[in-house]
Image (cartoon, rainbow, N blue to C red; front, top):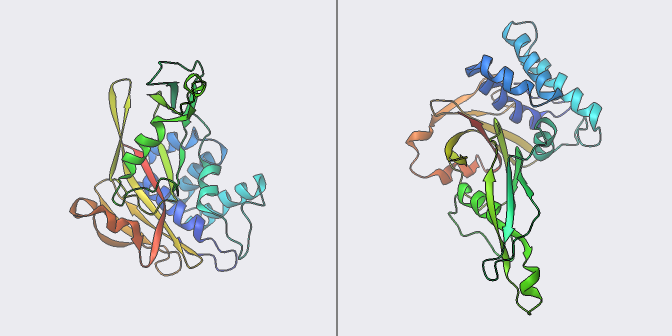
Amino acid sequence: MIWDAQDHSCGYDATFTILANIWAEQPGVWEERFIVFGYLMASWANQLKLVAGRVISLESARNAVRRGMYAQTPEYFPYGPNQTSIDRIAQAILPEKDYASGRQSCGICGFADPSEYGLFDAFMCATANSQSPTPSGTKLSQWIKKSLSHGRGNCPVCRQTGRRVRMNMTVSVTDVPNLLVISLDDPQLVIDPILHFDKEDVLTCMKLRGIIYGGHGHFTSRYISQNGAIWYHDGVTTGRRCTLEGNITHLNDMRVLGSCREDRALAVIYALT
């Protein structure tokens, strides 16, 4: 996907290059999955069919979806040199749906909060906590588990006795998204090649399919194919081509994926297998 120098498309290039390659490996499967995400992703699926039929270019497909984003919230998706953010692109194209619920209880006094909480949707943000820094080498999967089980506030019963006891969250995964985008605001986290979700005692796997990098006012990406091949893309330098860098199964240390050509990983995309 070639960068648009006039309207600065690199954020869209990085994101939609990954999504286009996911679709290309299983077009029948991902057409159905994209359509249920809503208007923008249904439009993207239709545009990709036109690209496959050589009716339009991949850049035209990108521009069509970008126009749809601009029409919905122009202040978030400006044209020209003012960039958007990867977080806003992800939130625009992914559905707002809770995929897990949780109930809180106190491990000291036994108080049970009757409320049910929605815990995560298809976009998550792995934020750094200055008061409790993430240990170096912490896996993203470990962060997700800790984040979901972290109670929301202290026990109100224990508070009456002067104690501050954090509530525990019991998590129930009700569904697993076809796509999961996680914003990496915490640079200490190590990207996992596979995430596992326990849905009603059935283990569901999501594979790492893309990483978006940023820095120096530009976005690039890596796409990971079903067989683990790692492809690098930069709309400015590689254009419509991707450069093969290796295979994820051959990496001895996943921390190398946290950066790319002096830019750091800003977001990861996982897809249902």
